[in-house]
Image (cartoon, rainbow, N blue to C red; front, top):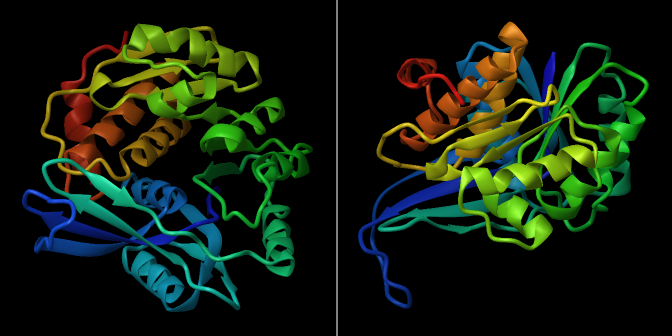
Length: 304
């Protein structure tokens, strides 16, 4: 079974505004409310690709109830822990001449709720896949992902980590199967500015040397780079298309890569599936459908 973890799920309020003007009253021309959070996006995309999975995490208050309701209405399976205090966050995603995001703060997770959650994770078995995705509330330590991985280290569980800065770095010594920073997050880790796929390669290699088996770097219009545990370096620019919504594109890449790996156990195929899924979601109003992903997959040539 595949499990995704989202410590900080959200309602994503996606608002469309013509010519956003700071400091002025702006009128929305469209909008939608969606269950959000990196792990939930991974789960939703895996569902589109026919990969059975369960979303884990924490919800609170009326916003948490809506996250659960809307996620299940989309066909998602979830096993959330409901917190007694606070509300799940609301993230505002403004689509205009350029995209702007305002991400809310999540509720504090108390020690008892965290202990219950760790019990759920401790029930994972050999052969399961675990995706640890996104930020965590400020009430939790930045060693949390590594703590989880240490707890599960006695089992053959394939773990992917999609997080930034210390949350990612602390997980590397536990040897995750996959890490997926974007190019800006990779640059922040090493205090450099990275623009081309060739510039990404040595820094992706450094993450691999710190413990990650595979390093997949998303680069928006520049495509992606994979530093595989076999020593292969796979890279390709993004396919042609109009970017409509970048929210969830990186999460889609993670889901596509995992689905591709589960299907064939081949890194070139998994990389192509990841790039196809990420691009298809960027070209869509919402997370891409299987048909949209398959169409992009057919457009891509050999990934070199």
